[in-house]
Image 1 (cartoon, rainbow, N blue to C red):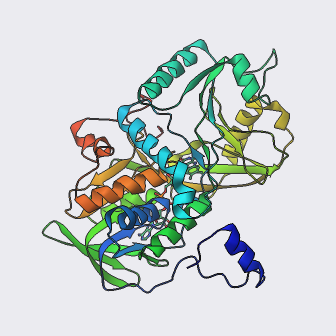
Image 2 (cartoon, rainbow, N blue to C red):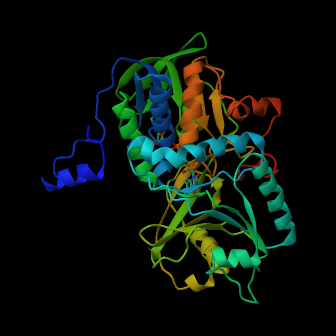
Image 3 (tube, helix red, strand yellow):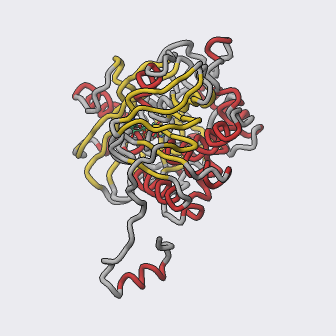
Length: 418
Ligand SMILES: Cc1cc2nc3c(=O)[nH]c(=O)nc-3n(C[C@H](O)[C@H](O)[C@H](O)COP(=O)(O)OP(=O)(O)OC[C@H]3O[C@@H](n4cnc5c(N)ncnc54)[C@H](O)[C@@H]3O)c2cc1C
């Protein structure tokens, strides 16, 4: 398989770039593997990659019912950050951000990770107090955070509404300079190529339809392409977590909701970093192609439909215009939705399950894209050692039974947190 470099592109030019080898193989499923990972999104692929790279476990299959990255990995607004206040989240997301910083070089694949900063806007003194508390907690955990006043926000994001009669006047903001965005498809493809290079079988169009469990221990899975044996099975299926785990007899504190994303027609460079609205729920950035990429709240009712709808367009349109009135005449190009598995404290679940040999990675709520490398890294550790890494110890499933919530917003058991 070719090593990607400027020299390989030049060499490819000699044959009009027609002789590139496949980025990953398309193998038929074998009868048995050491580890099966269900779900070929970023998290499943990252897990397989780190199982092979960090733990030398290469007899691994990733089973994907559709195509790689066709789930939330290819549908999100690509924001990467680690601006969390609570210990369990802060250490985990910071580990992930550190992995992002070296991911393109590590994979020999440009995932277009761009650290342009993530700015949370504050519109009241009380909000500034809350941000200073979060920023201080971040700094105590060694995470970069800067509290900006109104003038500093203006310098960072001059396109925002700084007029005297702004509907939601800007008081200041909390900036994480190392946050940013990445190219979501490239993340899935780069991880798939990296895992495949290390010997992992990536099997698309292979739906897991059941589990083989004997005496409380997993023995393999049933799939649309026949049974496959494995001593260890990791589940990383995002919005399908509840019903896949139900096949193993495990019920979860998760609800499935839709989250939509929106892209405008392209503009010249206009927004440098990621900006989030403090008077509602809206986050916006600009893609390399020029489109404004934005999103907001969940649709607010349980659903498995992966498509957008009109009420959210109006809602998000209002929020974007309140933040940046100058885009009022911009046209929306397209919008879509992904299925979100929302936990009751807004934090993910990465760890063991009541079934021996069955491991769970899910409950990503609004924020699993930024977790992709970190999630794969700690999940691979958990599977390889049959116990969590200290970084994901507090993000276990048992916390819901034992009352150890990781409730970043302090909002209580509602499926809208993140
Ligand atoms: C609109 C939107 C915006 C978002 N914005 C952000 C953001 O800005 N930043 C951020 O950090 N996060 C964001 N997220 C969340 C993020 O996208 C997800 O948390 C993350 O991508 C989850 O990755 P994953 O690999 O777990 O899931 P997926 O990419 O969904 O992968 C799961 C895979 O499992 C497969 N699967 C399901 N059932 C089976 C089965 N039975 N057998 C085999 N395969 C199966 C699916 O086909 C799917 O490909 C957003 C999500 C959405 C929908």
